[in-house]
Each structure stands twice: as C-alpha cells, then as structure tokens.
Amino acid sequence: MNATTIKILILTEARLRLRRLSTLVTLLLVAALAWLMLADQSSGNTFIAVQNAKVLYTSSALALGSATMFSLVFGLAGFYLVRGRISEDVRSGASGVIASSTISNALFLLCRWLGGVGYLVVLAGAFMLSIMACHLFRGVGAINVFVYLETYGVILLPLIFFSVSCAVLFDGIAPLMGKLGDVIYFFLWIAQISILGSSEANATHQITSIMLFDFSGIVMTMQSLFAYLHTSNISMGYASFDPKLVPVTLTNDLWSGPMLLMRFASAAVASLILLPSFFLFHRYSPDKVKVSHARERRSPIAVLNQVLRPLSGLVQPLFPMAARLPGILGQALADVALTLTSSPAAILALILVLLSSIFVNLTMLPSVLLAALAYWGILVSDISTRDYMTGCEDMTGVVAGGAKQRYLRQLVATFMLGLLFTISIALRLAFHAPLLACALLVGLFSLSALASLLGRTSRSSRTFLALFLFWLYVATQVSNVPIIDVAGFNAVANSISITTQMIIAITALIFGYSYNRLAK
Image (cartoon, rainbow, N blue to C red):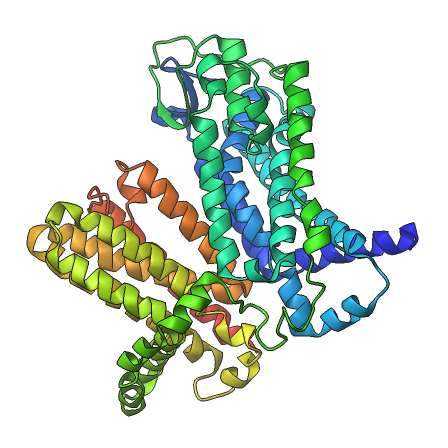
C-alpha cells in the first residue's frame, strides 16, 4: 500500500469526524469553557494564585493554566469523542468492505489512530485560540504564539495520544465496544489522576519514573511551577488573592530539558497502548460484531441483565397503561417501560435505591442520591439516540408530531426515569430540607434537558455521558460550591444555583425543540 492511500485513509478519518454536527457543538462548548475558565482579576478572583498573590495573565501563565485545566476535561471527553467509528462502519455497511480489503490490521488501526489524533488536535487548537482571544481582553502583554504552542504541545499531546490509543483499542475489542468500555475508561481516568496526585513526585518535587504515566501533564506542570517559584502554595482554577501583594510574573521558559524528555517519553508510552489492538482487533467478524446490534456486547452487564430477565415482568403493566394514556405522556411512559424491560439490572437498582432511601439514616441519604444519579445518567444517556442507533430515526420522525414530538417524548421519558430513581429521596428531603428537594427536582430536569439536547444534536450518547461523569467527579471533589451542586447531594445548593439550573433547563429545552422543529 503506497503513501497516497495511507494519506487518503488518514484525511478521510479526520474529515468524517470534523464534518459531524457533534464537532460544531463541541467547538462551541470548548469556546464557552475558555471564557468561563478565565476569571476576571478585577472581580477579586484569579486563574492562578501563588502564596495568595495573583499571577499576571501573561502568555506563559494563561497557556500553562488553561492547558492544565483543559487536560482534566479533555482526558475524559477526548476518549468519548473519538469512540464509535467501528460501530459506524457496521451500521453503514462499510465493515464488510474493510474486512475484505487487503489492508492489514496494524495499518488500518494506525490510520484510525492518526485521524483521531488529528481530530483532537484541532479541538485543542480551537480551545487555545479561544484562550488567546481572552488574552486580548484580560491578558497582560503581547500574545506569544510560540509559548502557547509549546505549552499546549508539551501538556496535551501525551494526553491526546493516550485518549485516542484507548479509544481505538477499546473499539477493536468486541466486549469493550459498548458502555462497559466507557465505564472502564472513566475509572482508569480517575485512577490515573488519583495515583499521580498522591505520588512520590508530588511530595519530593523530583522527576521520577511514575511521571511516565502522567499523561494529563498535571504533575509535570506543578513540578515546573515549583522549580521556578520554589513554593508548593499554588492555587489554579478559581482562587481569591490579596491585592496588596506584589503580582507574580511567570517566565516564558518553564520547561527544562529533562521535563521535555519526560513528556516525550510519556507520549511514547501512551502510543504503545495502541499495540495490543493490532493483535486483538475483531476485524468486523460476524461472530463477534453483530450488524443489527453494533453496540450490543456480552459484557458482564449483559450477562447480569440476562440473569435478571424475570424482573422485567414487573414493568409489563406499564405497556397497556401507556397505550391508554393520551399524547406525549403515554409515549414517554412506553419509552420508560421499554428502557426498563431491556435493562432488568435497572429494575434491581430501582428497588435497591427505594429500599435504601426509606431505611437509611438521613445523613446517608446524599450517598444514596449520588449512586442513584450515577446509575440514572448512564442508563438514560442513549435514550435520545436510540432511534438513530437502531436505524429507525426516519420512521419515528414521520409519525404524528414528527421529530419535535419525538424529542419531547424522549426528554419526558428521561425525566420520568429520573423521578423513579429519586422521588423517594426527594420526599424525605421535602420534610427536612425542602430547598434541597427543590434543587434535586430542578437539577434532574436540567440534566434531562441537556441529555436530550446533546444526544439529539451530536447523535452520540457519549457527548452527554462524558460531561455527566466529569461533572459527577468534580461535584464529589468540590463539595462547597453551590453552582456545582446541581442535584443537591452536597447540601450547599441555594436559590441562585437552583434558578441557574432552571434557566439552563429552559434554554436547552427551547434550543432542542427549535432544532428538532427544523429537522427534516
């Protein structure tokens, strides 16, 4: 196979990803994130603080801080954004052509990997340009393009290699193509951050071998700051500062030779994760990848659902009830019944949540709520994409009410499932903390609206799932910020945060309805 063919494969892979509507949605979210991330120092808060003194928004500070914070989101979201191309091949019928071609597994997957890397590099570049635009309004000094490029490359390239390598590897192994692979990667991401956060490198401020696995670059960033500032009292993200202290200015040369070598080595290790896929790739074998169920696998969850199949009889009465109810309510109830019937494990989870919420001590209720929300979010992430994934979107779009009524039905079904998981918790909270009960219901509606909007516009369940899991992780780590306490399980939600979530929900509802009204 010549170089021209390889070039075509790589460019085609990148173009297919970049031309999707989900890419436009992602770019808009990336641009919004850049502006939300950068605190206006005139408000008394800053992006980076050193010993309670603000760090001036120079090119070095903005590049380092933004790339580091972005890596937290990008390490999780990048994987889910790249995932799914194998399933697309199966659904489009291209899998048979690829499987019968003369291209080797290694070359095919390598081209897929390079295309995915190119896609994430474009997204990272869009974020960098957004930060540079923020620099024009809030920054200090001229924009140093080289500093931005160097910093983003050093921090983000190993992370991009890691995310794409895992995505291609998981897509190439049949049992990991579905939600099981999504959840496994989420825990891998958490484990990587947790292990590195408590590593010896953080304690000794020395470059150690463990930093080979610092794909996110967080530990190395803190090492570079410590080497220059000689203090570990550094806050990054959103911090207050003492305006009486002299501002700190970061140098443009934060990266030493050993640090750069370690980042290059980390990128090499991240690339090696791709190698097992060359030997384990299913190559669209019909006995491993079903054409009619491109996303369905005999994972442990599927085995559990098979064992719990008798529980589906508990929701059978919902189907005749749905047939008798008029309009969207009946249709949504049918969607709820279908979701529970196809996932008996969810019925068991509902029973466990109900019993726990009734009998546990009130102080344990937030933990039950957290577990219920986590399961609900994973369960409903594909409701708004189910018609598209099964190839019946055109059929359901021409029935009475069209695409816009289908959108409302799926949103209501998502919210109803959320109520099933949390209504007993909300009732207990209503007697002891009515504001938190209100926060739970409003937050649930907001999350439901976002799940339906993101699923419909991106046509991928992973867009919402990645953002949902990331929010869930942040909310468990930052428990004292009301705006992050969307569902009230941190007990710090207030009237302002509840109002904000209601505005988000209404905005998502209006935008989603308008989008589906214009859909053909």
